[in-house]
Length: 294
Image 1 (cartoon, rainbow, N blue to C red):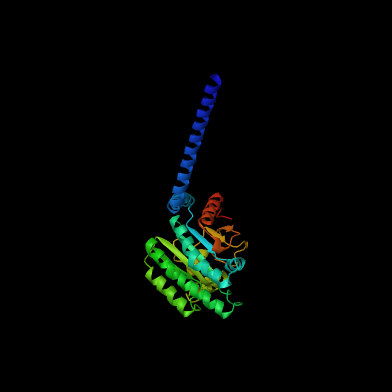
Image 2 (cartoon, rainbow, N blue to C red):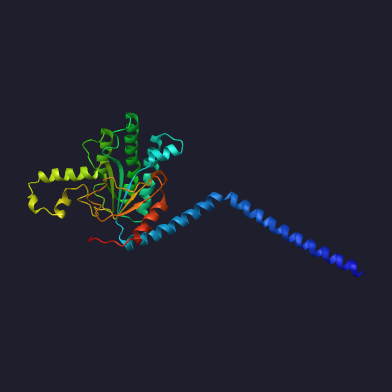
């Protein structure tokens, strides 16, 4: 009789354990099913909470460290396209029509006042075929279309720096329209460096100076600053210049304005840029000890 009671007790315990495990498995499967059903809502909310937290933190860093102007050298688009089995022009298409508006919005959300994109240099098209150049100009033109809603929302004054006299007609028309419609905004500034080169800018500045009848013998740096492309801006000089695609040179970008700019070189191509790159740039800037005297 004692053996029968022991056996019964063991069976009861075994059944309880089985039922408990079955209940836990059922709860697990139900939870997984709910997560699968609502996965988009759940993960999107998690992403936006994460982005909101990061943006709030970065705003504080930007304000504390006085990061007012970030300039970016858009590079590596063709290499990125080839690496991903795409045509070179598709790299530019992705960079200008998707990434540029996204990165601009990230910078604006971080409350950076002035953003500069170096879209293309004076010598960019010397070794490119006509069809590629035509597509490139078309992407630049469409990029302005995509940026204009952001300009109106964030009150961004858009300025093209570089040579206007050589811009293709369709691009020039779009640039002039963007500058005209945003001329009264002052909350943010966006510089689109097109047909731009730092030496060319300085040379054009000297030509303007020669027409001003100013006595060059008493000319100071502050005087000459009035003849560069960003002369009338609140923050004409970049606090940090970010170059994509791993090259560790400025290639003449903002040669006059970059005297005290911090430099940050990123191995990723511009089509790979995201909020994390902006975040890393801001954090790196916050670690620099800036010395403006030497």
